[in-house]
Image (cartoon, rainbow, N blue to C red; front, side):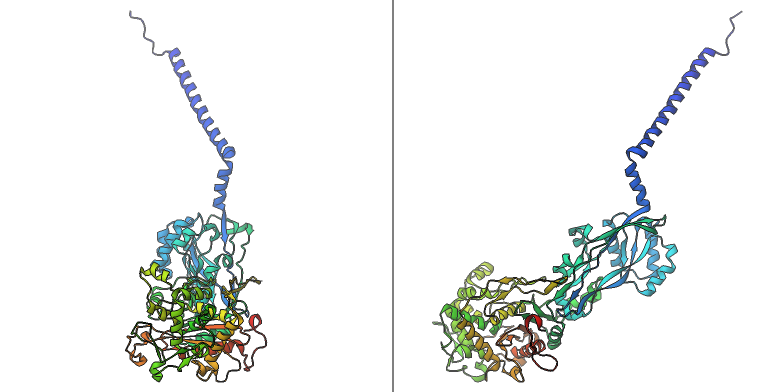
Length: 624
């Protein structure tokens, strides 16, 4: 019989069972070890990391935007305020379906494509759990709609924030400037930590120049939230530091007088305090409502401003560059005296025209078309300034030369920025042989010197530069870098004093007497404003050509299109014996200085006279 076959091998099964048991134990032990290692890592090694992440689901860091500093005029009248406004924001992490939420919001209130585009741009730059603004300036009705539907809009919040408001709109638009929403370029340039929770920044004017001071410092708070993102309690809070308040040299009554005097005309008025260099008035017309720009101007409103032929966004006071015309003649007269080329008694023959030696061309005096002859057979300095005799200054310019004119006029601040504390100031042009060679690659011609001698040709100035130059004439040489801001949080801000214009007392007196005669002599070019004056003014009229006139052609204003007519200018200081105010006025296409000097009279009256018509006892810093 064959040997029996074993159905089971207990030893083999025992070995297999032992091996499997050992393998299972090892696997379980290894898995337990992994769990223990992971547990150790979570609870000990990386405890702080995961605790922080956990806290972020419960605790949020919220920025607290600072209150922007206020702006006042010199008398404490509020010019730039902060008023509450409501904005719609979204915390993206708390929104289950962003596209669906945006679609639902568009059903409840108007949201433009521009709003959506701005939202997505801000969303890309935000921090986790930071609210992204979608709509500004919610109306009461819009807020009510959102409140009723709040249950269906997780992550959507309505917040109240302070918004800039300009209490006098157009009146100070060019002087103060405005704030606007932070754009994409500014967002990349700014330190994001300084502007968390802030959506606006100064764009132009004082608002831009003093942005760092007005903005303040951002605060923050740690808050505990529930699963829906609602704030349960504030854990800790660090208050923001508000921006500093600014008090300006500007006087609201002076500003209003200048603005209303210009009326519908295009032009500018700048008035300076001769004792401090403070800007008492800075007006450019037409103006615009600066409140339009705070939360983003509409396309229709911006197109109307941008495309207007009157260019209301252009600040003529600091950006407008005009030929100064005859307003440059007092400075030319001082240059002649200082150079020794003339004396107050020196006279020039005046047939009504001037001719360069060896040149047949006649350079006409403005009075030739009125009288058919000159101002007098011979003209001395006082008459030349008072009646604005071109022939006298043609002769002086030829003898000074263009480089001599540059040497003597440049210390008045012509051809360079004044350093005023605002934006976009232009430098004007004070020509010289080098300037023309550098800018035009051409030589200088003698006839161009004559044109420059009466403030025409290549010479360009801003109304601000003319006001600064007038203040130098009024103070007999003191030269300030003008300032709009008078104090910061009550601390006085002193205007920098520049190198003075040196001249002898006799020379200053001769020039000032000529300017006094402009208003108070029988044939002065601005004598009409002397009627009823309770003080004395020193001034100078000016007319700047807009289009060229051929040598034998007569300028007739009625035959010239309105925008091709001459500009009218006037500079003045008062009171004559102890000046406290210097004024420069330009009226674009006003036809001549007669459009400008009545405006200056109104501004000076407002500064020097009170309501009863009596001259103020105090002047300078206490005046106004």
